[in-house]
Image (cartoon, rainbow, N blue to C red; front, side, top):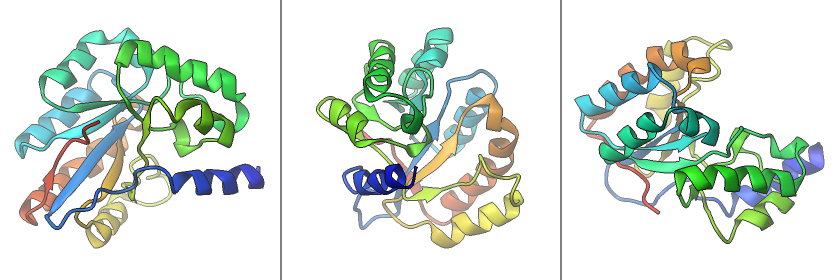
Amino acid sequence: MLVKRIINKIIQQFEVKSIPTKEKVIYLTFDDGPEPSILDFVLSELDKYSFKATFFCRGDNAERYPHLLELLQQKGHSIGNHTFSHLNAFSTPAAEYAADAERADAILHAPLFRASYGRLTFGTWLKLRKKFRFIYWSLNSGDSDLDRYDHLQALSNLKAKTKGGDIVLFHFCQRHEQETRRLLPEYLEWLYNSGYKSQAIRP
């Protein structure tokens, strides 16, 4: 496992972690959906400030809720591939993982790719690198980790570390819905009041 983690760290150097800019622009990203309720909430919050974002969708969710995928596209957000069934590359053969990503691509048709759990092996990276642009993140909101600390600590961390060009990780799935609902509105309000804009990552 240690070797896989080291290799994954090396692979991350070839992934997009931030987008250089001199402006107060960041790139909000959301993983694991689309799922009802939480997506409506996230879109409503983004609309308040005319923010655009990038949504890394699971293929199984997109297949189950095609109208939500269409809604994202209609609103001008970017779509990314987050595999079909959220496999862990560390415990999945490379061929199986690549096939899962291709299955999602048949639904999403999105050249942006974010590995589930942020994990890739050399084999999975090698199989997918010619087709996808790998997107990582420079700032983790912590909305999937609020059992370790409260949302005020997470918000304080975001405020302290946010800078232009950051790719910020959030989620839009029912599993982390409660945490996202607590953290996202306050962060977006702070971004807007601080003069930041959020743009979608384009292929």
